[in-house]
Length: 488
Image 1 (cartoon, helix red, strand yellow):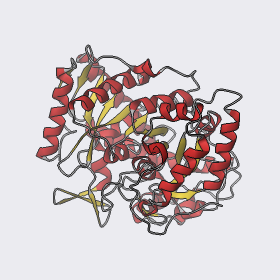
Image 2 (cartoon, helix red, strand yellow; image 1 turned 180 degrees about the vertical axis):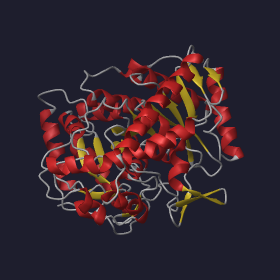
Image 3 (cartoon, one colour; image 1 turned 90 degrees about the horizontal axis):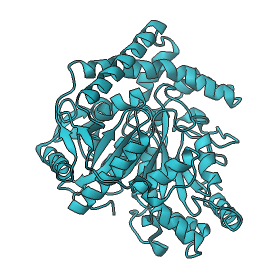
Image 4 (cartoon, rainbow, N blue to C red; image 1 turned 90 degrees about the vertical axis):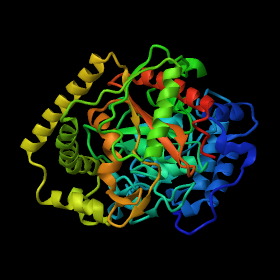
C-alpha cells in the first residue's frame, strides 16, 4: 500500500534505534554487515521518523511495506554477495522513475503514471542493496526553487517550518535533513540539488553532466540536466557517486587530502550581491579558515558581461528542450499524452506562466542556436578566468541567503525586502549547471538564527574526483574550526 502523506503530524525530531538517522553510509553498511542493525531494522527506524514528520510534506508517496520487502531481500542477498549499500534507505525525487511508485514530477497529469522499470540511477543503487522508502516532493516539473508545490503542498524546513527548503529537489533535502532517510536522489538543471542542500545544512553534489545515466528521468533539458545526490557528508556523497558511476568500491580514505596547493577563485561580483553583512562576515571567516589551512584564494571579479551571457543562454536552452524532451520521455513509456497535455494541467501559477506559452509559441530554432553559442562562449570565459589565475575552481556562497520565508507570487523575504525567488536563488549556481560543470554545496556555518549556510565549489568538467577531494578537506577544516555544527 502506497501512502500519500498529507495529514499534519508532529515535528520530526525524535530518536530511533542506534540513532540510524545519523549514521554515515559506511557505518550503516557496517552495521548491516555485522548484524547489529539489518536493512529491515533500518527501514523500520526510518518509517518511525517518517510518521513523526508528515507535516514537512517531504514525500509524495511512501510505501513502507514494499521497502520492508526490499530490505528482506537485501538482507538475504547480503549473505551471498557484496552489497555496498546494504542497509541504506533512500528517498528518490518524484521525477525519477522508481518501480512500484508513480513518477508524478509533482504535476497532476502524471499522478497515474507508473513506470514498470527503474531509472538507471535507481537501478544501480537498488542493485547495490539500497532500499527506496518513497518518492520525494518537488517543485512542479522541476521548474522552480521553492518546492512550493500546489498539488502536494509546500515542503517545510525541518528546522523552521515557516521557511522554504529551496528547490526543485526540496523534498529530497527535507527527508535527509530530518533524518527520515540516509540520503536522497535529486536532479539539477540549475540549482536544484545544491540550493536545497545549502538551505538544509546538507552536502549537495552534482557530477559533470553525463557522468550518471539520465535514462528514466522526466527531463527539463538534455543539455543541462543531471541526477545528483543529497547527503550528510562528502564521504556519503562519494559512496553514492562510486555506485552511480559503476566503479569498484573505494576505501574511505580515497578522497583524503590536504588543502595545501589548492587554488580557488572567490569573485565578489555577482556572487556576494544582496547578502547581509552578517552572512558576508561568515563567508569571509570561512575563506580565512581555508587560507590558514594552506589554500590560496584570489578574489578578482568575473569579467564584465558574464551574467548577461548566463541570462542569454540558460532559460532559452531549457525552454526549447523541455517540450521535446518530455515528448520523448512520454513516447518511450508508451504514454498517449504529450507535453501540451502536461502543460495544460499544470497547477502552479509560476510554472504555468513559463510552460503554457510553449504549447503555442515555442523558442525559435535560431534563438536556441544563439543560446548554445552563448553557452560555448561562457565556457571559454570561465575556463580562461580560472586558467589565468592558475585556479582549480570557484568558491562562492551556494545561495546569498539562509532559508528565507516565502512571500506571495514566488517572492522571498530577504532582510525585509521582496526578491523574486527564481533569479535570486539560482544566480550563484546557474552558470556551472548550464555548462555541466561538477559542483558541490557544503554546509559551512550557521547564521545567528541557527539556519545553515552553504558554500559552493565549482570545478571544470571532468574534475569530479579533484572536486570531491577538495570538498572533503574543506568539510573537515570547517568542522574543526567550529563553523559547522551539523543539522541535528
